[in-house]
Image (cartoon, rainbow, N blue to C red; front, top):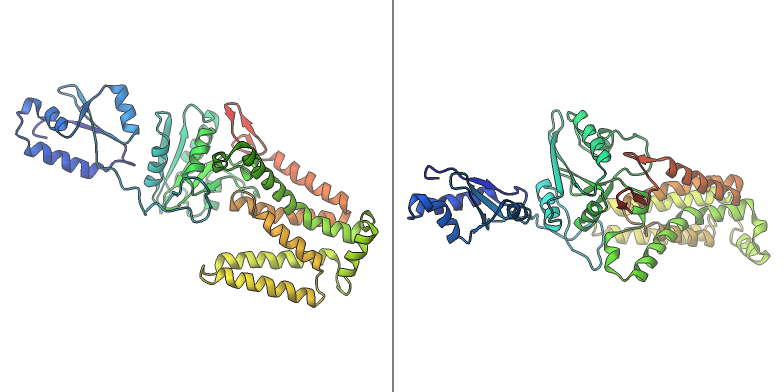
Length: 418
């Protein structure tokens, strides 16, 4: 500018550098101040503040622009035009928030990183961005806190990215293979969230965030078992209330896994466990039903799965109405037709409600799948089969690792992680 070079320092994700440079150049060109002090005087007129290098780092993290003149060795803090972090920023569409921030990630990766930077103002925040894909290029960023994240885990993630940099990422299944994860793995490898509060909480726990351009979610690594029951927003409540809410989520997961299996075990295999009055009541409710309890409950669970899928696929204007009416009509019809018992309708409804109590839709999908494993064990071995199924699931969870961290971990070497 006017023969004198200056260096502009700022974060592209939260500063509109292009428009800011235009305004700065316009001020320089129209200034009548003599050349020797033009840079300093012009910026001071626009509320520039001379600062040192340590203050400059803090200012950059807060979204300020730093103008450095090498010739005069002057470093000035400048209030730039901020980048509009908008789609606009809307409340989460897939996750409900109570007493927490009502913002969510959008499809623009730079905007998402800017949202995180506004909430985590520290020099320890690191962002590494890569361009991946052979013919369909996409940007992929990893975000973590240097002083909290596990260094070995970060090295593994970066090595997978660098080895597979020419692999196209169109869906999350591609990302699983991209990161070296098994194709048929049941448990989710990432904790998907559209809430910045959850992403920031993950960073503070030493986790790593992945952002994929065009995907309006943060992918939190590693995803552990305890994440099924814990939400960052819980800490906005009093401790006893937070503990009670988390206990209800654990109880909901157990109900989802055990209730259908208990019905099969007690009705078909071990009816002698029940009191005689209860056994007679159940037998009376099943009078006229032409097939065994295992077939009965499998049919109802599959119908419930179809209703849930239909509620997701149908338009929002008619989806809830169709699924509610369909559920009521089908439930009443199958009971009147003596195809299932009244007790089974209660159990299926309770299972459906309990399944929705855990955190994250992907975690609810795990429980929806694993409950069939326990039902199969219960249909063969009865009550012992329920215990065997739970032991099998626990052993499977205990054998899983995500980038060297056991799935059932509650803590890491650097403090709490769950």
